[in-house]
Length: 462
Image (cartoon, rainbow, N blue to C red; front, side, top):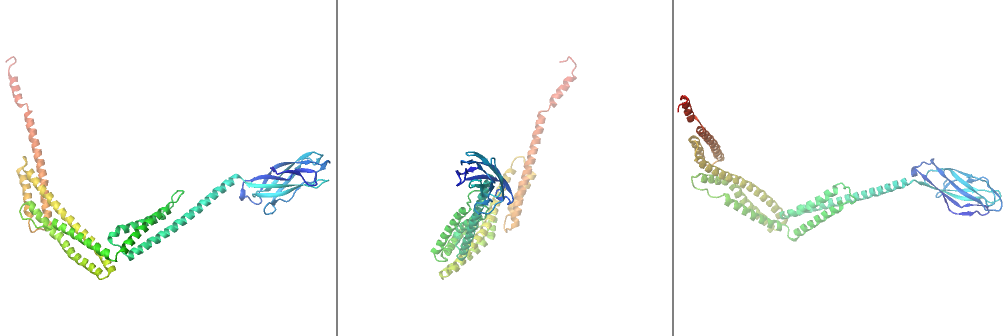
């Protein structure tokens, strides 16, 4: 309770506080029902008779309780108890305020009327401050912070979606520009960078937000989008700096020169004259040359003639002022060149396999001939092994064919297998011979004869 001040009422011998504040806490707070009531804590005030004559206090009552802001009547049941209704001059008495009041939070006002017989009534303003318990304040604060966070989240997601739409529009615009003006293949790395930056920005914006106080998605996406725009500006500047088709035709000529040099290097490596001779090495080289003539030469001959014609046609289109047509044709020819280079490289790898196989077979055959001369190899397996090698040498002669090469490789492998078996047999025979010799050296057969003869002598004889 709070007594605001204390002064006598005009015309009344009684003196008391001019206003009283009574605080009441509502557990349900804003959720309290209209019919719910709270018990008013007992509040005691003191009345003093300041007059020279005795005072008799009559019926004490409260005015109807009202809401302080709206003036609406409030549900309440208030009581007032005066301990001593007869006051002599200078005497005081306690007055107790109690009862029940509505549980809805707010400030409610009433007037306490204390009439006397001989004077004007004493009026005391009574304010009831009904407040929710502190837990409601904390709950409201949490709710408010949650609402602020939720609104911030919605605003952030709205910004992310807006940035995503702008990124998609920018990527679509870049895609349309690249379709209208196809860049040369020398700018493919730059085009890939542009697509990668756009894809990174869009994928970052499409990801859900991470658990953090700060959302970095928009900032990260803007960085990638700016990089993509810068790359796109560089590409646009390069394409607009030269006439349409000039870059493509020029790069096509460079590509054709490089491919011709590659074809020339392969021709010098594989398309060589066949060696003349009867040795196994010369016959293997002859087969490799035969294979190159059938695998590599047709492709190089065809592409050399065809690309020469195609490059000249693209250059004539550009010279005729048909820049877009020459650019499109140059791009198509360069892609064809790349596929042709892959085909020729695959064929060269196949020829390298035959060359390596020939080197392996030659080395294996030479080693087998040396190992066949070793001591301990039986004559029968040695003749069979050398016969397989000689047969392989004789077979490797013109006219060559693909099954012939496989047969020669099988004969070399057969000779290698038989050589290993012969060496194993020689090792086993040598081990047996060594064992028999050792057993003979360790035998006591000669000594046993002497012992037997000594046993036949009479006892005591020398």
